[in-house]
Image (cartoon, rainbow, N blue to C red; front, side, top):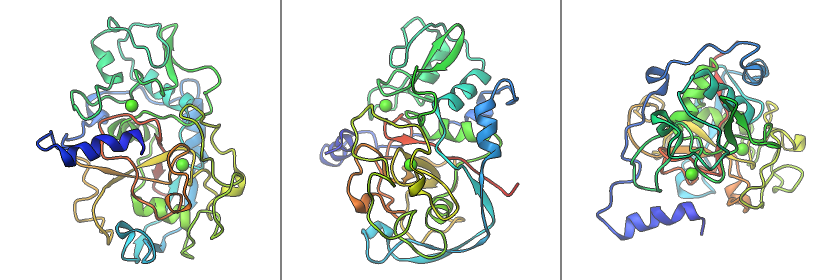
Length: 318
Ligand SMILES: [Ca+2]
Ligand SMILES: [Ca+2]
């Protein structure tokens, strides 16, 4: 059983515990002003923004009747045109955002080891024990699976991981990163449309089962790969790693289908589980967890960073 599934199980068995995900997400875009991204301060983030892929307006198939109950019923959702990132957000790009925040944090420290005397604002970079809700950071740089440290007064990716996907961001941290870049998180319907297109395929690349050329999966806990390394896994719009590598935060609260954008599930001020999509490199090693419709990720703690969850931003038309 995945480690992150254990607290969810305990919560069911050992009431009363604080309800999981009961915390209203902070709005870091309001609370923490960030310097505007410029070509010199944020080259990776601006390049990702410029490379976003267009997804046409249309009516897209969402869900499946022949899959897990939370994917039923199959239905159609009409979407406005939007754009989505070609790849997952990298450690280098996310470090640019942390630097733009000008946090008063004392380094140096390496990823996973924030010292106690790092300063009051280090609380924004430190998660507490799973399920305790003692704080809601931007990213959990105190987790062993984070890949961003601090050196020379700046946040820097761990050597060798600059172009790997950023993990350990909380839901609100992921949302704030995209907003800083001039984007947002995709809704889960947008994510599925970008991954699946209009033909109702099961996987981003079609209907054949996952293999090592299409989905980066079945790996050790620290074995992420550079983003976009499997071109054969591209979705109909050209998005890479939608299945595998890291699972990806969406803007959407986990609620039963059909997907209705106006029923409150897109309200960022409501506490609760936020859907992650796409399966991840570590836990989701079965074909049914790697489909473009799978929505049962280990994302019931949006206030925590997770080693297996990353970010892909969306935006309106260019
Ligand atoms: Ca992914
Ligand atoms: Ca964590």
